[in-house]
Amino acid sequence: MMKLSILFIGLISLLSLSAWAIDTTQLKDFNAAQVIELDQGACWAQQTEGYWRIASFNDHQAFQVIPSLFNQQANELLADYFEKLGRPAPAKANTSVRLHCSGAGHRFDVTSLDSELPICLSMDFDGSHFEVYRNAGSADVCQPVTAGRLVFTLTENKLGPALAERLRSPQYADYVLRVRDSVPGLMVVDLKKAYYFKEELAGFTFLRDGRIFKAVSSVSFDQILSVVGQSIELYRSQP
Image (cartoon, rainbow, N blue to C red; front, side):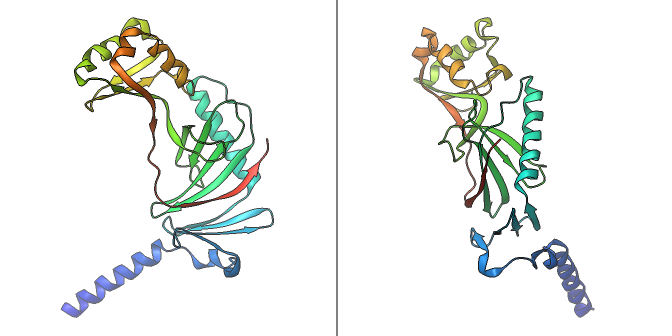
């Protein structure tokens, strides 16, 4: 009976493993001599004429990236995002498309190189996971920060309640959606949609207020922690 139980558990493990593995027929077109290996084998990438072959082993996916189709999908997702903000999407710009791979899987970072707005998109291949960030970094590498959010560092913790009350006052009703002070010494301000990608304008407005200026030592973006891994630029595109 013990042997039968061990055999049954072994069969379950084997079936589970095969169900989660990449179908090896999807890898048959990879040329080992031309494969770029990212993050110790988390992904394979191979450039061919007109497209990239990608295998993301931690996502159990293999797929092709055709620039024209990928750009169309990214533009549609971006247009939908700005429609929800109640604002027109920025004019199409030159973009850099990078593949990032890690133990957490793959993502694509799409960065506008010369857009009117400093934007970068983070998405997976099929667009099921999609985020738009403010780019606080260089033009061609995304340093993501949360759009529509500012972080205030207080000069003294005891000034927090008065600062929160000031920011919630009718004077700033057009700017402030929500004020949070859950971390001592810090205050997070979520802005209304009109100030997404215009965070500096809101920040300068706040700092012109003497009461706010005296209460804070700095105002900064809300930095997104990046997952450790490895990335490569797949291509650059023009509108």
